[in-house]
Image 1 (spheres, rainbow, N blue to C red):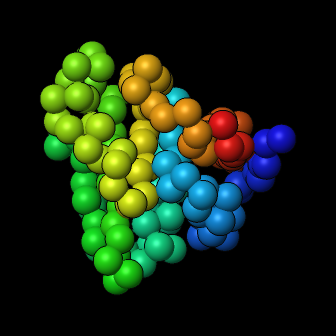
Image 2: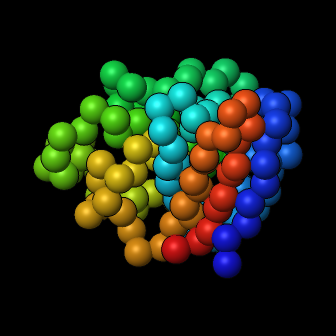
Length: 140
């Protein structure tokens, strides 16, 4: 069953980030769906800060992936798949290798690589409603 919350302000996102991390810690793979400008990158930034990232770099639209090291020797890979045109493009950058590591994987535009997603991951859907955001998440 999906969890959801309505966010009325970016100030709400730190508590939402904590809930999402707690839900996603079994797989450490979280996919974010939402229209352009829905707030995927902003929510991911809050998740990164919650996990211990001090300097969040924003969305890796052109570099495809940003990597962050965490104090516990784990880390985060933040993927922005908006510009991906084929599964082969992801495989060429070592997608399978990323999946084998015990690090958080946060994915914007997962629909671009739906055939490559693992069997189990947390899906976060952000829906725009005026100035509010309905943020839903469930483990698949």
